[in-house]
Amino acid sequence: MKKLRIFILFAVLLMGCKAEKQATAIGVFVPGVMAGSPIYEMMAQGVQKAGAEKNISVTVVEAGYNQAEWEPSLTSMSASGKYALIVSSNPSLPAIAASISAKFPKQKFLLLDGELDGNPAVYTLRYDQREQFFMAGSIAGLVTAERGGEKKVGLLAGQEYPAMNETILPAYLEGARAIDSDFSVDFRVLGNWFDAGKAAEIAIDMFNRGSYVVLCVAGGANEGVVQAAAERGVKVVWADTNGYDVRPGVVVGSSVVHQDKAAYEKTRLFLEGGLPFGRAETVGVKDGYVEFVRDDSNYINAVSEAVRAKQTEIVEGLLNR
Ligand code: RBF
Image (cartoon, rainbow, N blue to C red; front, top):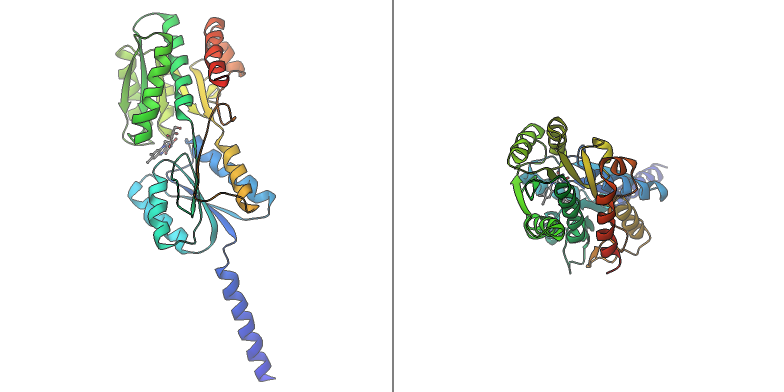
């Protein structure tokens, strides 16, 4: 009897250990905070939807703005062995995941808005930011040109990074120059993704120096740009999500990525066993993941019919290439 009890105790313990080791959940690693950064909110929403449909628990970890803490924090998530998949987003994640993957090769990663080809534990999906920010530049150029005055558009970035310097900024300028080749860009860097007060100060300086439209790619700090623009009667172009509602009449363009859709579809694909790890994919306007939102009443009310007609031509040019 005693032996039987000990046997049962061991059996239960063994089962417990096994259950603990089996990674059943999905982890979402937010490199920053979600509030004010729609690109991260969309990621979490998409993964949660897929998890709910397949009865898989999803844990969201917000790592905060101290970028030095991201790798240790993601390492401990990986070391826990709890997550069958870790989902994250931004162009700095592939390098961090590659370094972790050398130590924890079993940990699988789905990384959005970044690129890494050939690591068997990592799948990446990035958006065609040339298209996304070309359309942001053309609307900024059109709205500025219609008003007259200096041929200058503004761009405020949270920080400098290769995708910003090599793709987003040049594509934005190219979009404005598609309207008038004399356009130049006033490019400013905030230095973080949260300081709305400092973002407002920089935006005011940009407006004072001749920019009538400013594109903001500064996460939670974007609110400061919108506030400053509303007070000065100038305009803002929004990125990643539909921002017309943020301040109707002030936001004159929304160049979005459907990251919620991508996160949902790729998480589902993983849960169905079909996510092609080791591959890097890019999706754009034609694939339905990058879009300039034109059917919003706040866009229609904020921008003249002539400007909208020209912007539509540009968007359709990308769709029909
Ligand atoms: N975008 C945000 O909206 N919020 C952020 O907190 C944020 N943090 C970033 C941190 C790093 C290190 C990098 C490289 C990019 C970050 N981005 C952030 C920008 C994001 O990846 C993307 O380029 C823009 O949202 C434009 O689509």
